Amino acid sequence: MRKIAVLTGAGMSVESGLSTFRGGGGLWDEYPVEKVATPEGYAADPSLVLSFYNKRRRELLLVEPNEGHRLVAQLEKDNNVVVITQNVDDLHERAGSTNVIHLHGELMKVCSSRNPNDSRYIKRLSPEAPEITLGDLADDGSQLRPFIVWFGEAVPLMEDAIKAVSDIDVFIIIGTSLNVYPAAGLLNYIPYGVPVYLIDPNNVPVNGVCNLTHIRSGASDGMRKIINDCL
Ligand code: OAD
Image 1: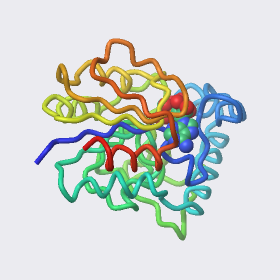
Image 2: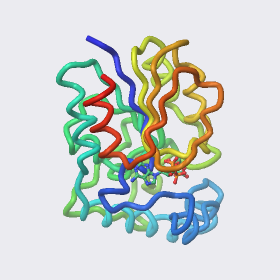
Image 3: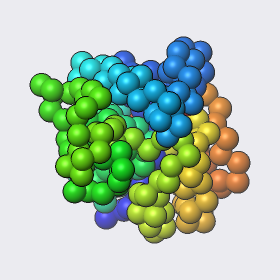
């Protein structure tokens, strides 16, 4: 079986109705990133940060995986697949992908403010009670916070992602501007000569990647093309 790694970003979930971060109308236009996605922003105004992610969670519960997510999941029928996503939504899992590495955390989970990566204190919120507020505590007694990797924080799953990429046969990139490190640095670990397919309607900085095919389309059309013409 071929080993395929799929690296996804916010563009993967656009057809489901979720916003991207950058570009006209992106989330970071409406909410300053330093206020809602940094440890300093959280320390300065924890209520604002909790309510920002409560809102994101409510939005996520209203949307469904799109055809692109389903086609990525379908790759598992004939291939050994790892999905490495920068997305904090759970749409890959809901579409059926079983091996997903969430580099930037998971929106439906919350964790301890004191030990964010201690698995003993990580909890999944239910769709019936998807919000947390000041005063909700983790089992270590600290305030519960979103299980999100904020800017300036370490990315604990990066090593797993690098390992997963090191012996793949095909690499697919979908809907990421490759602006954010270390995630974007994964491209440096693609074995030399492996076919790399990039699905994005816009230009993305993929300099130095050889054997690259850029499919300028949305996630669903791009995945359909790869499955029909390239694999
Ligand atoms: P960006 O918003 O930076 O980039 C989204 C990409 O999706 C762009 O390259 C768009 O051209 C592309 N795109 C738009 N519509 C698309 C469609 N229908 N199909 C496919 N692609 C489409 O989002 P990310 O690269 O994911 O981190 O951002 C990376 C990280 O920055 C996020 O994980 C988040 C953010 O700050 C944290 O919150 C820690």
